[in-house]
Length: 320
DNA sequence: CGCATGCCGAC
RNA sequence: CUUGUCGGCAUGCG
Figure 1 (cartoon, rainbow, N blue to C red):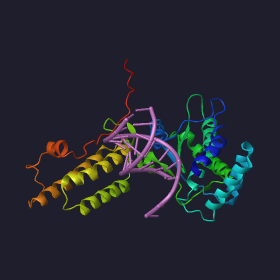
Figure 2: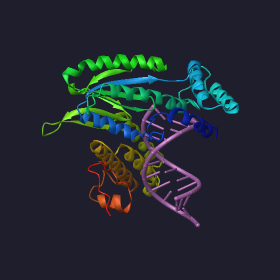
Figure 3: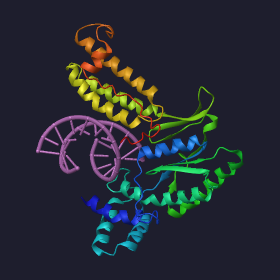
């Protein structure tokens, strides 16, 4: 409730002036938008990657900045008072990462970073070709730069400029976790749960390749394992009803890029696990591949089977 | 369309 | 472990 009010206060302040030409509010950025942006940049051979780890928690200095900014637009003493109280409550030195208010504020605050990156993109643009692209989601940021040798200087220049601008915005960079990556050398980076690589396809063409991080897959399987363990002697229908929503949600998020191999692995793992449980309930050995066929498992028992990567191919023409 | 519940993900 | 924002999906009801 209070958060809602806060949002109401802050949103116009930070987003209204993002694009003066339009009606003010920029389109919502989702994680998938950001992922897609990265993939598209890599398609355009922007394969030198600055992987930034930003720290933008709100110490007192930044509270002041924030308040000043709000004050430019809002002249309601009560609102300002409320905001001050909230910031004070949230900002007690060493704000815990999942603080009540900090993530919201940092997200809004970092819109300024967007403006700056947008400028960086435009300044280095050559006609209709951009040599620098970026994608940001909350404080996770990657900048992608042209692969061409003659643009190598951009890597150093952009890094330097960005650091200067970050300093102005009082956004700290975590140097230990920030690095530059050359995808053409087979290096990889991760962004929003995916690992990004640049691979040679069978035809010899280079293309971006991104898959769910192994860590995420392992975490999912660990969670599913727990479901199996806790319902070892329960009817399989019950177990499946617990597995399905988890699988559906997980797959739904990762169903972009090149996740199919990962999905197969998960499907196989789950199926074996279900078979095992079925077999054990009937005191049988093995997985009973013959006794229970796939159709029965998936169609009759209703085990989740939606492991499909949705590739946003050519846009379907609006029919009718 | 509206309301609600549950699950998943990013940060 | 808890908090928040955002996004998605599924189900139910009117």
